[in-house]
Amino acid sequence: MTHRATLKRPVDCEGTGLHCGRSVRMQLKPAAAGHGVRFVRTDCGVEIPASVEYLARLDHATRLSRDGAAIHTVEHLLAALRAMGVDDVLVALDGPEVPVLDGSSEPFVRLIQTAGLRSHDVARQHIKILEVVEVQRGDASVRVTPADDFRVSYTIAFDHPLLRRQSASYAVTAESFASAIAPARTFGFLSEVDALRRNGLALGATLDNAVVIGEHGLLNPLRFEDEFVRHKILDAIGDLSLLGHPLLGHVEAWRAGHALHAALARKLLATPQAWSLASTPRANPVLDRPSPRLVLQPS
Image: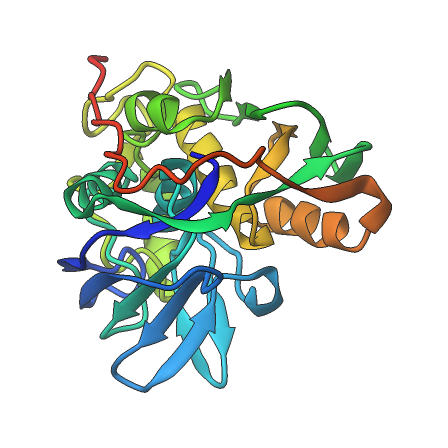
């Protein structure tokens, strides 16, 4: 799609926040061209744009904050909106966190498909990478290099017998996201649960919304053999959507996470010679184009 797009109609869902443990109702609403993705806390009236400018806490999830109000765990929804081509939408929530649902982006893809897409008569602009930008912290790093499409390559490595190292690489399109990336769920280690909850995190985590890795095995089955690294790719797509425009570039990450994704986005914006805003070649508007259907791949 060469033009900015919004939803045809509002859609909503309700679920528990992964970290706050509270029930939250969320509605996605169509928005005008140029509106971008904006969250609004209906319980306190604060609106927060999905922008690097409003990034706050980044441990175990991505949080946006403004005027004393916050929205936690935005990355799974943002990844679905970006990959499925939704540029302009208002996300209304009556609580502090996007519902985790099943721990992946799959339910959000289904919501977008239910709503349908409507094109605006405004060309979509991309951030086209012109030179390498990289961030490194210890043995973790992430960089973006020039490319004619948006690709994410990711490697994870943990000191755990069940999760030593996984790598994956995808050219991110609506189709590849829906089938290969969106269903990948968030994951965590059973040994860390008590410490997380003492710090006010993972209060809503269950085996229904996260893959849990025990000392000797998984507590629930995988959807993909490499589901863990696919979910990290999902997180990177969501975090980098806070740049405000789709990327044309190859993101390469090694043992990274939310904080490094955010650091790359900030460094990229602070390095204007490394990118340019490029419009998709203009064509006749394609109104009411149906979004691709999600197909869950067997593990």
